Length: 115
Image (spheres, one colour):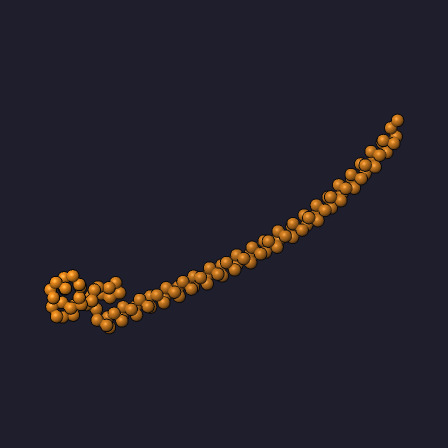
């Protein structure tokens, strides 16, 4: 039997139950109440962290909504300017067309008068 203990780890040592291996979630020597208290403290800390996180997210969302509203206003103004410029370009195209027709008429008169 001594050989089987050496090759196969057992929960029993010398006929007694061995202590469980240390865990990162429990400290050696802590009783149930102490572990429960520690768990409660961790839970409270996590709850507080989540509340802070949610508050931060709400602030980020509010700031993003404000920036989006400002951006929408800027885009609206830019579109107004573009529409006005498009109208001005159309007017310039009409003026250029009329000048071209006038030049064509003048060139036609000059050709007819030339010997």
